[in-house]
Image (cartoon, rainbow, N blue to C red):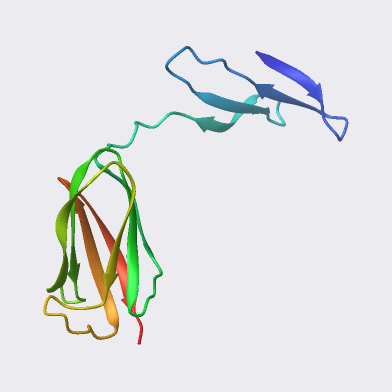
Length: 144
């Protein structure tokens, strides 16, 4: 219902409060227009839940780095996890071999070495973290 309440300036303002049915919700805030009509000020509606998979979140720290960094991520369920490291031209330069990890917070360390163990040059790298069928891409900056 619309309920009047005294404002700080002595004028009246109106708020609309809607109680949602169970399992569904919507929030709307209305105001009073100068001509006496009602104006919708704010409307909030639910969004569909994001698709969930084994890989919930991923971050790289430190970034920029030299010469080591760590991939921090969270698994919703046990998964087989690996990572590919690509240079700015899209060529794969290194990989973190696949391993089975349990659900929860995880960490994979990476030293800026190519597949042959040679130091990589400074630059921008793309790290693709894979957990079963899910993947996340992270940008990494190697400074020297």
